[in-house]
Image 1 (cartoon, helix red, strand yellow):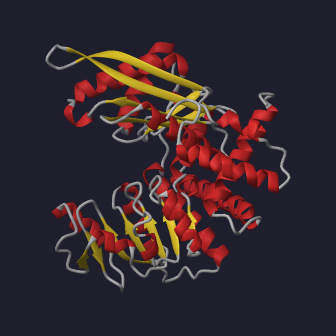
Image 2 (cartoon, one colour):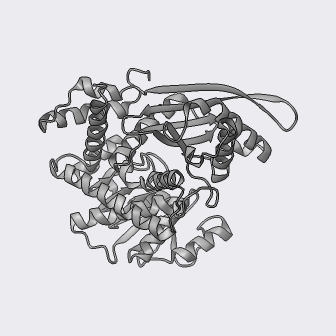
Image 3 (cartoon, one colour):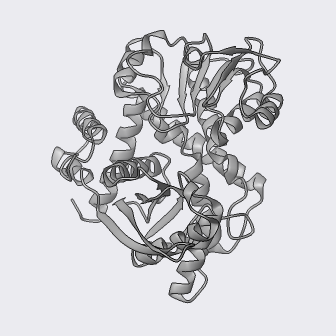
Length: 420
């Protein structure tokens, strides 16, 4: 990969939507879309951190601000030993689309530090967090770029970074970063916001597709924070969760199961193996169950060209990032199995990040019920907009409709700014 074409996915989608725009007589040209083929700003830093044994270790970090046409750049910071710049560019591009598709006034960004947080003490982790934010402090701010948690980063890490930034500028600035703990400027409802947003998107699509929600069967791949809360919320809303899985095991009961009992069992036993109310199945078998909804909340490329023909679900919900490969996407489209794409399905988290930012700027904090009500409105409206776009060309996938909508909004913003 290079700066000219940062990722296969980005270029493929830009090529697809350009033809769609032209067919729809929208005044966008390939030249105008070229503005999205490169990030606006790439920050690469190498910085020292004092370790507990007194030694100094140099860490590498990145922040990519892909687009700021619609507002401040927005996106997570991850700590992982395999963080690399090209990955960060791709994720920043996708964040630009995600913010545009749910129509919040943000651009897209992403960042990370090459490190293994499991090998760091609490003190080393704090010093690394503070050192990294010092390196990029001149390039972020509540009206410039607003970081958030991502892989292996927490509310505590965000609070350290916010505190360090405030020391640098010499005044309180809670809106510089989101994902902070409640009580430290964080928003209520954020813990399960991605899952709740996904449920609202799912229900809106089921209404549109005239699929019965009450008693609809669901298989949930992944039982981390997102998968667990999604299963819990769907069960509460009358769906029947018949299968769940984690990284070690999968269980299935065609009559449904108690998510509370399954969660308690996993907490105690570290896996679902031996859970009395369901049978143990192979993890790949969960993907192929005859269910109404398959919710993918684990890893990327869970559904590939190798298993896409075996999928029996009526509808797929992408709660993880890129859980359906491009090749599988085409096979599922040929089989008329709709896929609700990640840039819409899992955007509830950035939605509540936006609410946190607004609360910080206004100095007024919302109740949990108010946050949840605002999220329902945001995600339902976003789904309506994607469905409207999809309705213009039902031969296209929902994913392509979401990309078209997002890119159209970004390009229009660039035009209004006089950049194209």
